[in-house]
Image (tube, rainbow, N blue to C red; front, side, top):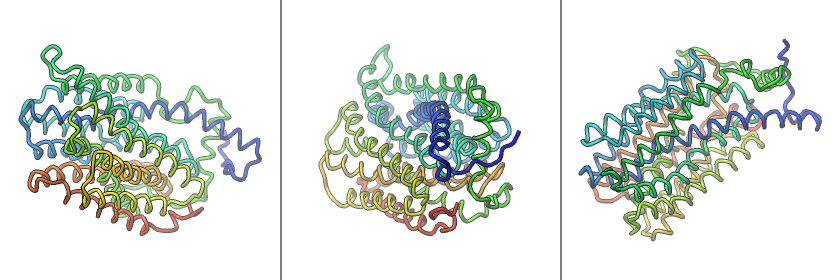
Length: 441
């Protein structure tokens, strides 16, 4: 069957363009709905430790340094297994591997309720990272096999907004569970939270195994013509030489730049996810539910900024400035937060600016790797970028905990994170124009 390229939407007549848009809406509704809920559950299991800290540290006698190291060890496990996990996914298919990832991370997240010592905390967090490794790069690789370049930023945004939405809805939910379930059957509220919030991950893993198609050609809910159009449209942008070998992936300058940009961004994102509850606590808000409600605004700002930036970048077909400007905004927000005293409301407003700036860049970054990677190279390259990004996550959790304990202040850590965001801005502008400028991909 022919898979000749389909002309980009801008070159189609109105009727053809509307038909193509309708087809992509159908695919988006099927795939992105599932992946959104999967990532929602995954991210909630990853960051609910931030609210659990408010009860967990007192219950177990842990210090901020122990918490920071334990929270950060998640990223060590994630980084160590990221590339191998994505290479396995390429071999065995998305359905089996993503299901495996979700079921194992759900079980390990629930196991956090049994932690009693720092060593147990470290082991569970490391294993949780190892279990989740491969999910985000695996989904990003999968989506690149369904959506063409000119639609990719908005699609990645629809997937990635699960991060701020998970915090937006999950923080009040986690705070409520910690209050409502505290002491039920002699179990702490933080323990109930880990158990109950892990169950959806396991259930979704089973659903992925039963429902997710591995490839366009294997999809039962598409017609033959729809499959032909989707396959042809993947190759509709101008041909470029693509990297497929592992050897060339690790020496490609573009991958290192994108990975370091993502690392800088994750520092800003996790400063909000992991440490904002403690910062709000220091401003005088002590109830977990109240802290969860205060965190709604920063995460709502991130949802809006990701969707807006992804759509704007696709429409303009411009990537570099859509990465650089949000990084600059987040960096300035971190500097102001670190250098000025403020109330609870001022803290929330500033972190809304920081979160919006850091999050806006995420969907734009992921439009670029599939333009110069394919096959094994794409699997390894996308995983390599997420590995570098999660190195930023480790820095953003452990270093701030260590600095807070040593200096009794988050100021130095927040200033350092602000510098990292400015470095991300500079790296975005250093990305090759031939890949990141209007129409060049």
